[in-house]
Length: 284
Ligand code: GUN
Image 1 (cartoon, helix red, strand yellow):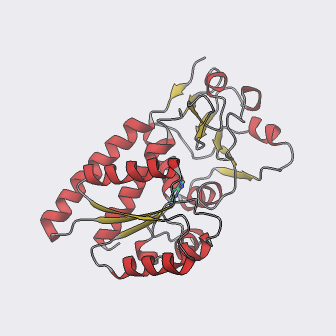
Image 2 (image 1 turned 90 degrees about the vertical axis):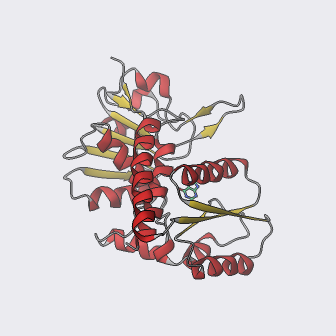
Image 3 (image 1 turned 180 degrees about the horizontal axis):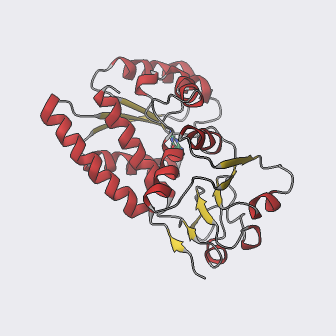
């Protein structure tokens, strides 16, 4: 058996075109152009690429974006001061602070400083709290992208045993909340990296979401034949190639469907950032 390859790039492009059309309608009706302020601290090459791609996607959808490139040694108070300025700027509907931040900065305190109404990443505690309470404002981009990618690729979540590898706020924990919020009757297990017998848990899963941050960690012997495998990881190997958390070639031989890296979840994260920015501009 050879897996269906879930084409995140194509799905994301279709969503971005829909968002572009809605953005043009918003402009025509109200004169508002959605605006995203991206804050990038330091010179992390991967973060530079992600922010460039996010800004290009804004541009193509007819949105405005601004890059605030800050030095790696910026102080906590100067960074919070910048965020307060962006909070007060009416042209800025969404604020994105690209993570990770340098270790001298307090990431939680930085995210706390963002106006929750402009938190288009969905990572502010107010927005995560609303999501946990079942009345979400902005869904975090990667979990929302994983959900949408499944839905638009014909993956049925309802009734499934879903195992999520990784419990970060940015992916694993909030994906579990998104799946609960959708009201589907999936059974969701979230694994810690030191959970007992992860391979045994994975082998019972009908849908696996890998977000543990270890290159090619999930191997074919951990996957039930016919499972759906969604890979959130992205790593650059010493030879320059990109790979995910899943050993793609061997797992693709037994899975029913699998997301590639690159071209799977990554483009969906960007499409969902645009969607949240459009909703922020609409005043949702
Ligand atoms: N770093 C890796 N993924 C993300 C994301 O979705 N948002 C932000 N802000 N930083 C990231």
